[in-house]
Amino acid sequence: MMESRESGGIVVLFDGVCNLCNGAVQFIIRRDKKGRFCFASLQSDVGQGMLRVHGVEPHGLYSMIVVENGVLYERSDAALRIARRLPGLWPVLGVFGVLPRKMRDGLYNFVARNRYRWFGKRDVCMMPDPALRGRFLS
Image (cartoon, rainbow, N blue to C red; front, side, top):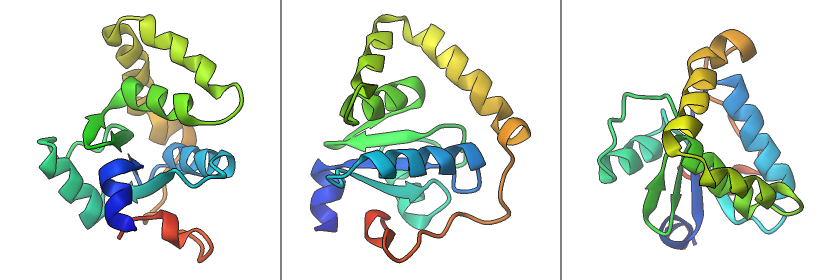
């Protein structure tokens, strides 16, 4: 099943020590009742390996990344991909996709640069509780 998730599901790679990123993962999990999203921290072997496979520098832990159907999306593109696949009104945020990527990524980068200062960071990556462990790639 994990293989099908990696090749055809939606994998979210996130900064495992970032409180904002961990909050975003919890936000997605609470809304993703069908379990379409799975997760790996950027610091993990799985996360680092997926970055290398897609030719992304594995040391740049600046972005939440989405890998969907074998295609990697970064920064605002990743955030919009997630929003479009959540239930409720969240897909409406997809309208921001009409804005130039440079503008969207500028705002994304501003938040990313300040995320530790504004939201703090953990000393170690988040460990999922046993009920959610199957949603995290290892």
